[in-house]
Image (cartoon, rainbow, N blue to C red):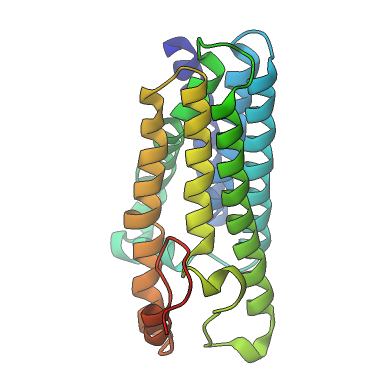
Length: 258
């Protein structure tokens, strides 16, 4: 297991380094966001094919991670390419200074994201290297169900938001229909559920401590780069968002409050 992890970490290190070189050339750190989902596809495929015989559970996780990762990468590419560097990285660039940020970004953004991919992907390592029966059991099916719910919220929420933003009449307004009627962040909730689906599959494979990866991912989504960060921005830019907060749960879906 340690050998698999180390080899996968080396692959990710090489990829994020090449991506960083490209970002310096085009002066746009935002490309790292597109790589996030694809990085997990690469790591998971390496675990699946380098850990021995391909069996039912490994086939399932290969399918689920590939669908999830490529969908996320394609969506972010569609959303970001041609739009310039994300405001978060622009702020970093101003704070640290352009003459320093080109090399500082390697450690602050690219190397950090590569390390997070390796930590968060621990359930995927647990699934491929698990020692339990290779036949699917009840936990596998529960994990797949949780993944399906999560993927529906994440992909559905992203689709509804993209469609909402395409309508110029909605500029400055708050999306409060569809999945967004029940949670202020259906895409983030869905992402967390996807990773808890992987955690359950890891447990089904007999790998328990590896669920740390799903815990870390959930913490990042809620407290660091997801819900918390976006809420601060939306409160400042959209006056209607305060009313939306009063009626709609932040994370877990539930019926709107009256």
